[in-house]
Image (cartoon, rainbow, N blue to C red):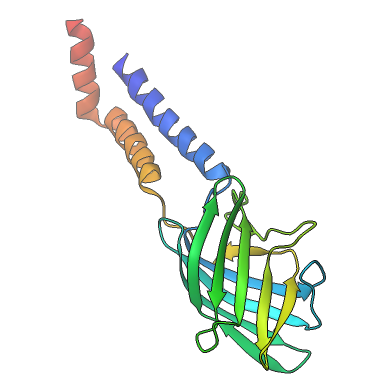
Amino acid sequence: MRKKLFLSLALFSFANLTLTAAHATPLPIGTYSFSVETGTGVHGGSDEGTLSGTLTFDPASNLTAADLLFDDTTTGTTFSFTEPGATEIDPGEFFSAIIYNAVDPLTQYHLWLRLPGNPDGSFTLTCGTDCHTWMDLNKSGTSVYDELNFGTITPAASAVPEPSSLFLIGTGAVGILTMLHPRSRRYVSSIRAAL
């Protein structure tokens, strides 16, 4: 009976861990790679180019670091976005933040991600009838808005297991080791005999 209980607990733990890993990530945590092209839309502009770099989120999903560079192929200039602003999270809908240029705060990138994330751990930029992912480039004192195409940000490194996942793995491993250890088998047999 106890052996079956340990086996059931172990199988439940590993099944639960597998199901947890299969679900979409609800919020971004860790460092992500980012690369997206300019496009057309509500905030469409005349510039063409690629915005790329990395974004880092803390365990509370606040954007803590950004290292993004927009390579404007239309004018041959580049714009950097390295100063994260406040984070806004609307669970089940979107994550948003503004990332500023360190020298010119009027040059900024407006980041919007769909929530929850995708099953592979990436996050999709919010685009639709009004694509919210756009840049406000301050060129000679004039705001120039540029739309960014639909895209995703992907984990830059393998995710660190969360504490609950580690607990499930540990519980399953203890259950299996307990069943396999000869001393445990004798102990379970003595309990059965006493019952």
